[in-house]
Every structure is written in structure tokens, then in C-alpha cells.
Length: 475
Image 1: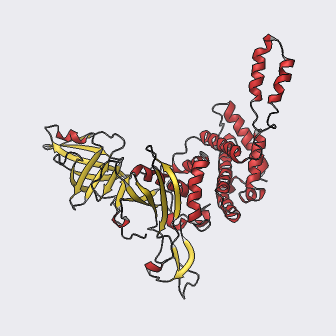
Image 2: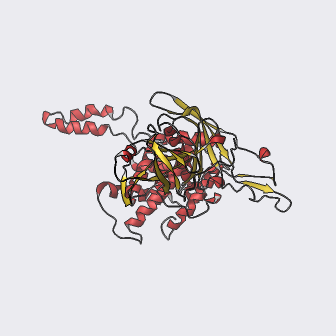
Image 3: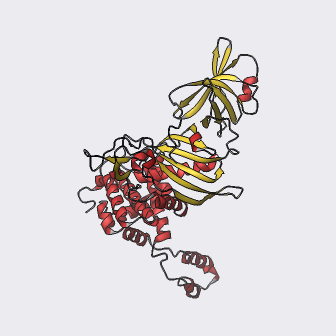
């Protein structure tokens, strides 16, 4: 599967060429395609007089040919408008933004075109997928060890009822090479900088399906890093991955930019701990079955975090939701117990004047959920006291903090009294980080991750949580 030397867009350069609406080949305009934060922007020159340029104002598909002779397809999924930039001599300068820029072919619409393959390079992927068993120095590419492909069976069904499955390949992971000088291995030729994840869809799928695969892959890496995993390069291919088409488009990542190398020790999950044949299906299953828990954890790092109160409310709600799926105490009273109390209630309040009050009590009898303290205690037990200790979390303090914060958020409006110190803002910060760590471990458990890997994940999470270990807090 290792397709080498795939071409890529040169993001920092302008790409001059001729451009026209896909269905109007005769309406050709000169222009330059550029990228701003991966967003395609086409700047066009047209005569001052005449309306021909406005044929490009609303075309969802624009074709182009660069001065190099390479074909380009531009897709607009956002209804971008034609912007007037001014006049230069006897020409008018306009610009239009697009969602996709695909190099190497003239394609049909976003909805109609079908691709068997998509491939992606993301920040930290090479280290995350690294193979730790040293190989002989200068081993030929044909003899390099490879991960077995993972299988995603029926991961999505489109509106017409077509079900899609996919094989998942990891290409060019970081590898250790051993020789007489470095018998335990060193990173030399196989740095992982060009590592890719490749999806092979059956049947070939529209770009929207591949978009969903990228979204969930990016979420997996974000979950693994507990940090951002920006997209670095992307390709689509109809039948032959060796003929893959480079794609440039806006990356949905808007979170805190990574500040350098992602180290294995800081990851809570990687292919060294869980084989890709197990990891990929487990993650795709968790994304579906544990919704919205994985999404709340990953979007916190993938996008703008918003106000702290909102983040805390979301993660506490997710923790309670997880208890509803995995908690041993799913009800406060045995089945049928509360229903049996309707008769005594009516005997106690029999008069017609008591009817509204009886109805109120009947509605209250429908609430058979365990108390918040019960749910939190059982979630802490599911994580285990040993892992909580590894993460420097005191179960007793965490439960007390969550109860206090939940009451404040539920019954008051703006409440953060002061920045810094150990006031409300510090309490919110602590509850937010600790609850996210606990939810992360619970997700890993539901994915079927083995105990030793869970312990290592807890140790990785502790790096961030140690800042809350202050005198009198987590003891």
C-alpha cells in the first residue's frame, strides 16, 4: 500500500492559470489560486465592461488549468460570493473563496464524484503510530514491517441506504533502525514525518463519507494526545492510490496550536499499546455508542474552548450520562417499588382538593435515578482508586467538588468571583480537568483497552493534573 512520492499542493505559492465554470468551458478567465490558512481563494481578472464574470459567482464546481498544465477542480460547499477587489487599468479584479481545491483532475460535483481511497497526514501521526521493535539498518522498503490493515465494517450508511466499509492502513510510521553503533535502535531514515493513514472504502464513496472518516481519525488523535492534531496533507483517489489527487481545504481545527513534537510519554493511547486492528474499530464503535462522551472530550482540544462554565457543565453531564450506560446502580429503588406507593398516597390525600398535589407526587415517583453522590462514587470506583492515585485525584475531594460546582451552575448565573487564588474559578478549572481525565479513562475502559494500557494512560494524564496537587486539596 505504500504509495511513495505523492504530489502535494504548495500552500505558500500562488498558482496562476485559466478558470471556468465546470459546465461552461467557453467562459475562461485568468486568475491566481492562493491559500489562506488552507482555505482556497481564487483571484480573477476580467474586462471592466460585461457580465460574463458573474457566471463564476455561483458555480459550485469550477475547473482550471494551471500554467504547468495541471488540472484543478474547485468545489464550493458554502455559497461563497464573488468579492469586488477594485479596478486595475482596464480590468476588474474579483475574488471568490472555495471549500476544496483538488489538484490533478477535472471532477464532477462533491455529491456525485466517488473515491475509493483517502489519505491523511496529521500532526504527531508518525510518533503515534511508531513501531518500536528495531529493524536492521537500511532494510529495503519491500522488507519493512507493516501494520496489518484494520477493518471498519458498515461504519456509515448514506441517505440512499448504501452501507460503507473500509480498510485502514498506516503508511510510513516512525521506525527504529539498529546497527552495531545503536544496537537498541535509533531514528535515522524512518522519521515518521511522512506518515499517512489511508482509508480504502468499499464501495467507493463520495467525498462526504471520506470527510467523516477524517473527522473521526482527527478525533482519535486528539483524544490520544489530549491536544490538537491539525491536518497537514490530504489526498483522494478514485481507483489507484499511486494516482492520488492532492486536496487543500480549510481544517476544522481551531484549538490551541501544538508547540512542537508530540512525545509518546504524553499520549494516553497509541499503536504501541493497542494494535491498530483493535484500536481503529474500537474507536469508531466508541464514537457511535458512547456519544456524546468522546465528542465532548475531543472537541475541547479541537476547537475553541469557550467559557469555562460551559465546559464544566458539559463534562459533568457526560460523566452522569456514562454512569447511565455503565453504572451498576441504574435505579435508586427496585423496579416497581415507587409504583406501589401510588395507592397509599391516594389514601393519605383522598380529597378532590388534593388532586393537583397527588399528581405532583405521582410525577415525582417517576424519578428513580440514583443520587448524584451514588453516580459519582460508582464512576470513581470504575476508574479504580489506584488509577485515581496515579492521576493525583482524590475521589472524596473530586466528588465534593463536582457536587458543589453542579449546584452552583444549576442554580445561579454568573458566579466566578475572582481570577486566580483558590476561588470559584480555580475550583471550576480543577473540576473541569479532573472530570475530563476520569471520563477519558472510562471511555478507554469501554473501548476494551487492557489494564496495563489504562495505567499508562492514567500516568500520561497526571502530567496535566499535578498542577492541582496543592496543600490540602488532593490528599
